[in-house]
Each structure stands twice: as C-alpha cells, then as structure tokens.
Amino acid sequence: MPTVDKALCMQGGFAATGRVSQQGLPLIAKTVPATNKNKKQRPLRVLLMGGIHGDELTSAAIVYRWVEGMTGPIAQSIDWRIMPVVNPDGLLAEKASRMNANGVDLNRNFPTPGWDAEAPRYWKARTRSDPRRFPGHAPLSEPESRWVEEEMRSFKPDVIISVHAPFGVLDFDGPEEPPRKFGRLLLNRVGVYPGSLGNYSGVHQNVPVITIELPNAQKMPQQAEVRRIWVDMLQWIVRNVDPRQQEAAIRSVSTSGTKR
Image 1 (spheres, rainbow, N blue to C red):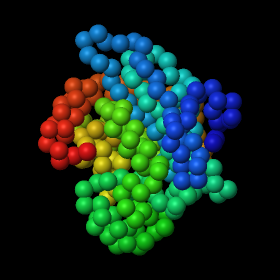
Image 2 (cartoon, rainbow, N blue to C red):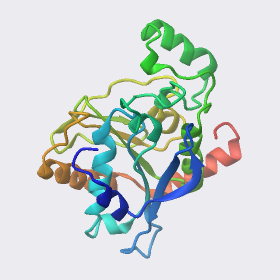
Image 3 (cartoon, one colour):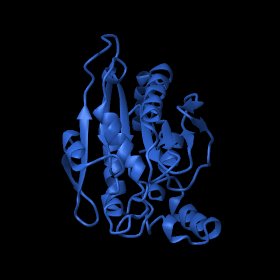
Image 4 (cartoon, rainbow, N blue to C red):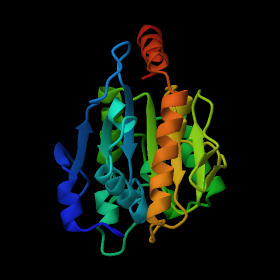
C-alpha cells in the first residue's frame, strides 16, 4: 500500500476477527471506544472501512494513516469500528484485483430488495457483463460481504464511511443532509446500484453511507489533503448525525420486521 509499511500496519493494533476471506486470510478490525464522552447521550458510532475493492490501494492506506493520527476531541468523542482491508484476497493478489478471489464485486453483493432480479439484470444490461462488476450468484454469497453485514448488525453504526478510488468525489446515500466537501473532494452523487453498500445501508437501512472516492487508486493524496479530508469528515459527522435517529430506526426495523 502506498506510504504504508509493515511497521505501520502492526502499529495500527488490528486483530483477526475470527472471520476469513475466500482464500483463508484473516479479516481484521478493531474497536476504538470514545474517551471524550458526552454524559447526556451515547457516543456516535462510526464504521470506517477501506479496501472493499482490492485494486484501490489508497482506500486501505488512508485508513491506516487516519488511525495513526486519531487524536483530538472530536475523534475521541466517537466509538469507532475500523475495517481497513475488506478484500485482502484482491489487495494481496499478484496483480491487485477489484474483485475477491471468487471474481465477485463485493460492493454489488449486499442484499438490497429485489437483488435476485435486479442485480443480474443490471450487470448484463448496464455493464455488458463486465467481469469487474460481477455481483455474484446470490446476495451475501461471499465471506467478505457477509462479514461486513455482520459487523453492521453487531456494531449498529450511526454512519458508515467507505473509502474508494479513483473518481475524486464524494458520494452519499442516506437520510441526513449530505456533505458538500471533504478537502478537495466535492459531492457528486454517482447513482444507486443493486447490491451496493450505499443502496443497502443508506437507502434501505436508513444508516447513512459516505463514499469517499480518492482521486488516485495507486498514489496517495498529499499529507495535508489526507488530514483535511479527515477533519472535514469529523466535523460533518458531529454536526449532522444524531445517534437518536439510528436508535429510532432500529426500533422501527425490529417492530415492523420489513428490514434487516
């Protein structure tokens, strides 16, 4: 990963979760609990993930960089669950691959309503059966996407930050007011896709998803820009996300039985 060496990976303090990739590599994560707490309400919960597409090396690298500098009152007022490399098989392949070891685009494998009809149809008609965007044969068919979904259900985040590359924009799905700018990245909603995390969580689970698209998959932004994106992201979270809204959404889902 660019600007990230073995020592920095080890310093991150990530641990095996007991889940493994298709090729048996450990899926790693860590929880960073809030230390600067508001006594009147529980801390915000943020699920931060990178590397869901294995050839987007900067998407994983920047997560390690942010963890390295996770200081300050805002960051320390948040409960974090951090998953730096969702697709280790793709990232560590001899030639890094967008897909996992089964050839599945993990960001098209989440169980959005109507997936069985919509995801294959979209793949064939809109992508012309592009193998880089193959959604799989069934939703949550892959160990990595099942792991992400399990983490979502157990951690119950108020917002999800998913880092990608190389489009150089912000995308947003969910009920809150979207951010306009993180660093030099401007809001540009790229659409809703069958099986995507933004569609599954932001549209159908009412848990907002910010997709940060870095401008280059191989080359990291300048250090000042890495920091600026981080600071802008933190400020948007604390100004716009209310943990009580997520608690209400959870109660609604549990009583209606229409969502999972």
